[in-house]
Image (cartoon, rainbow, N blue to C red):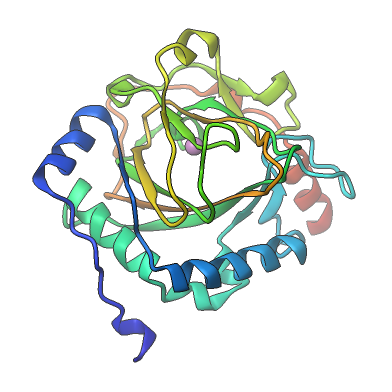
Length: 266
Ligand code: NI
């Protein structure tokens, strides 16, 4: 069968769509097949072990200072399809696209994808943040992030956690992780204010959760003896100019990743 003909196999109920619109997130037990999951796990591990994308700035440490040769605490690969074109035609992508259109509307389209890896025992927490804090403050993005674990995701190994209904808030003040301007990853200011409201979202391997780009979310450190692999796809409506002028001062800095790319370009 030609890969392009992969048809979605998951349709949300009206109750699930209503839950997402009200709470800002949703979880489902399966978004791919066991066969595809096994194949994706192989591709995923190969991309990280071969350092795919490192030279392009597409593989870097989201949670650490990212110096060359230093063990990453939160390795991330942006745009993994560039390094593994077979990812273009998957049941996961077909289902993620169809579900995103149910959640956001028929105009929703793919905005990119990434992979976040938490090594066994050493994988760091992804601190509380809103994805919108990474985006252009002049634009409003109505995005949904699709998060699929390639093994069971638990509180112990770093499943997603959400603050329900926080997608109705504006962007909160953020800072770089550890207040270190070299670090790419962001954390909301005073995260302890929000942790008490968290709802953890454990999932079976090949399940998925969805969240809006304004929703506060977090994933704990990996305290288990096995790696925690997550494969994330983003879908969104066309962005609109922000309703009011905003300034995101946490974006005014140079990360190690940016400095490395600049040095390379010279
Ligand atoms: Ni995020």
